[in-house]
Amino acid sequence: MKKYVAEFERPIIELETQLEELKKTPSAHKADIAREITYLEKQIAKLKVKTYTNLTPWQKVQLARHPERPHFSDYLKGIFSEFTEIHGDRLHGDDKAIISGFAFLGSYKVIVVGTEKGKTTKEKVAHNFGMPHPEGYRKAARLFELAGRFNLPVINFIDTPGAYPGIEAEERGQASAISNNLKILSDLDVPILSTVIGEGGSGGALALGVADRIFMMENAYYSVIAPEGCATILWGDAKKAEKAAAELSLTADKLVKLKLIDGIISEPLGGAQHNKEEVFADLKSTLLKTLDDLTKINVDELKKRRYQRLMAAGVFSEKDNLDVTRGIKILRGDADENRSAN
Image 1: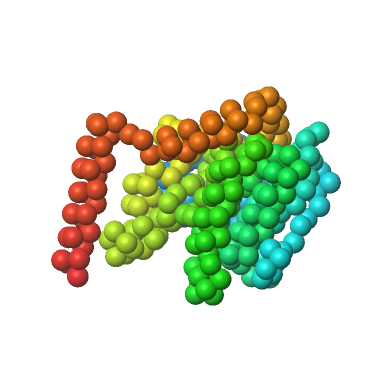
Image 2: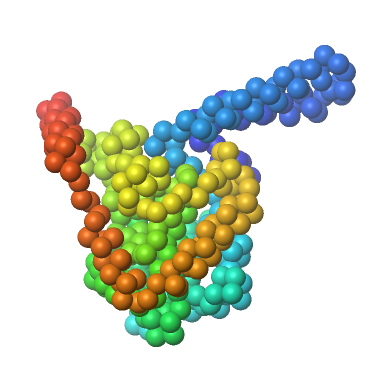
């Protein structure tokens, strides 16, 4: 199967291909060829550091969508034990874009819910490419209510381009299902932890994103809209997604500064797919430590802090307000120019 390569990774792949070809030559053991191999290995190492430590927002979006990146099903196996899946919303059907159930995180019995994209073509179709229908969110709501009933912490995993936008989803109450999840999570009497492991798009992500602590993988993104959608609205051209990504403040480093997330889980150079076990161990350790802290807080205080957290989102200073207004005018000016040109 052909390996997926993002455009910005091509120089690295080209050098790696040259290196493999050199290693396969019959004279690879000779001194001059051996020196060339050593030189290429050093150049590749330097290029990887230069490339992956200076990623643009758009390049991080590309890594967040990398098909070899660990999916929710991988995190389930790598972090939790004794997972028992719960199916269906008891109203319409079982949406495989959301997987949920009971599990153990270390010694903690928890409810775990996450969006799953699937890996093979067959799996992607079955999981609807990670875009949940209303019944998926209602299934999640059913699990959240069980968590409250049995006093179990909730662990959510987010990896979705957004809720499914088809007309049948709207007919079955997509907006209502998402808003109901926000309401339930806001008022739960148990600790809630959410982690964005890949894509975190729009209300489809927010439906699992109301939490006491929110973490993001280093190369994930979390945004009110996908860059392509933003580019289409502002400039009438989805090809300007790279420009939109730069304006959206959707990367983990920016969101932690804005206090919209609480922490960043480091990834190996080049993305989580290069050392999944290390990523699983780091995230598991973070989740366990966070649960240890949150379970010491009484329910009233926990909910009070959650409320304060939600109310603080989007608060900015007068200076920020001027900067934002100026930015909006610039964006609108670009959009106006684009419409005039057309």
